[in-house]
Image (tube, rainbow, N blue to C red; front, side, top):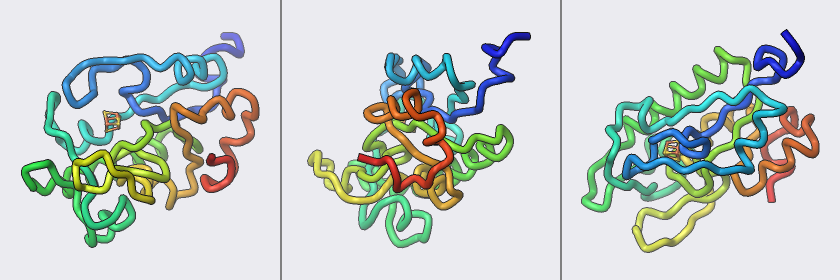
Length: 176
Ligand code: SF4
């Protein structure tokens, strides 16, 4: 088995919706070439925290109301639908499942979908469903950050190709 085998590449968690799996809200699929190109250097581990937490697909949109992912983990904010349905339990369960996958695979970095209420890194929508951003990561991203996993998005993951050791540095460093 050569060095290009997945066994010889470091594991990298990726949001499943970035690599062509049908996990998006409407059940559709989309591929992001910038993320797929990482497959030459990493063993990509696709995860969808909302599916892992128990959400169906297709499913209603959700945003984080009253705070971002850290506050949801603390029970001080909520993941809600436009109708006000509280999905926080599903979101926290999904985050915990993704952290378990990180531990099982030894992944030290993740490329997550920007601005998602689960996967967003550094910013998410604020619960108004008015396309307004707030500071703070999604629920899964916040839990992974607490565990020292370096986080990137589809918008900045080129750093993982140019500087592979960036997967070892704290999440705050290297973020735009
Ligand atoms: S952004 Fe995260 S939770 Fe949403 S579809 Fe993609 S992987 Fe699933």
